[in-house]
Image 1: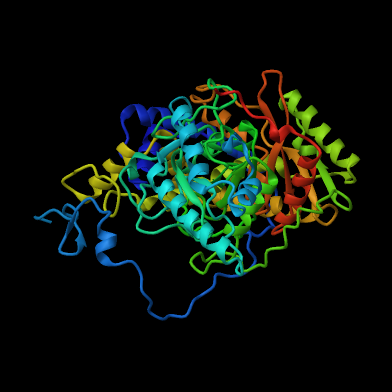
Image 2 (image 1 turned 90 degrees about the vertical axis):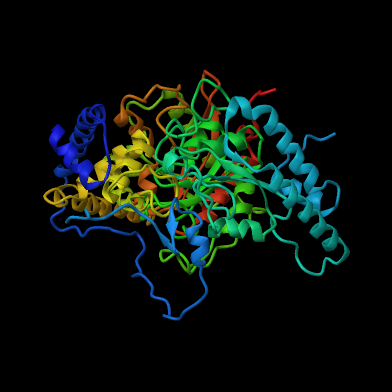
Length: 98
Length: 491
């Protein structure tokens, strides 16, 4: 299993990671090594085996849908790098001329 | 004058109860030792001496009141200093997760496990060092510099709870919280010669623990004995409605007074005694098992045939979960941000600049394993093999109560030894990952030293929710041995 630089760049874009050229180079080598090691899982016959997502037998619980106090807007916004009018502020999502 | 940093938690409690020492004096002794040793150990990312002294003063008042009217039981940890790994939120104190992406983040709430320590009267000495987001086996992935092993400062303390393990071994704190996703409590406990409990999945709330691999993460305790670890564990364990995977299971009584090996069946899995393991470790672990047998345990061979697949299964499932969990760190809601003209560049630049190399590696690996075209071959196949690994444990626990194994294939390694080869670093976790994949509890404790004078650890693993068997066995072992009483020469 070999990951090309192009594939690494594609994964990095999916993961929202801006990488340097040196990082792309290093990760393509290291991730290839790790995936090659993981190839041994293909030897295991799992045709009749269900997947395990959680070791707990019970299904996820639901709580009563009743309102209760939580952290205030002010508290939650206090940890943000930039806020405006009670909201998180970010640069434009779309270009102005889109 | 007794060295207050040398006392067990149980001894501290009985002295506090009788008013023979104060929590303030106990806390100050640990803070003074920390001030002296911390510059060379770096066990903490954020020490909290002022908070600790304030909590200690408060504890002393509560002890005074209790001594006047002892009709109610006193809080279980009243006045005991404890350290907390910096992946667990403590309200009002910076929680970095070992990462530059949260270097200024002050959580507005506390983790449930931390909240329970506080409610029981504990004194928090600080937030301990960790590999970034608990991803690593050495603390070398901490953005704040590595912790040094108190037994040999040229070596790693293990990881990711390496700061907690070093703090406990060096007696900067009598016990500390850690977290264990693939061995992050047990391996540093072994490297630093302390006792570490990784509870069953679901036993201790994950609320307020920075999520790494959500189906694997568990909050644990590092201490200088099984009895001390049990004291803290009993306080923080139990159902929490704030964690949807918290198990509503009663906690069996931890009656250590009468702990013995009589009637305990211990299985020895051949898959854990393999070529490549440091020979002194195999010798020490086998000697410990023989000792347990002499004390009344019934020892028999067992097989966990899918053990060899645990490593590749873990290194697909954990990164896949991590890639989803760490998506929340994007420079919008918390932490610092790298500026950009477009929001998508702000995300990518903040994450690219502020995550460390190992975190980026695992996010990429997880993203790949989950991506279209590869999901079935990697992630789904790993989940299926996980089923087989869990089935191995289920079958073994039909025959035995405990499974005995080494914690790691080597004792503490030198800084930089594995840093250029991630796969070699991952192999450090080969004996600890299966317990997380199967959700079973494990306890690591010291059973000897190698020729270089470095601690050797072994682990016992029990059936889900049978931490009581682990504490019982480890305590019985420690009652008749003194490996856990050895301390590194630091002064």
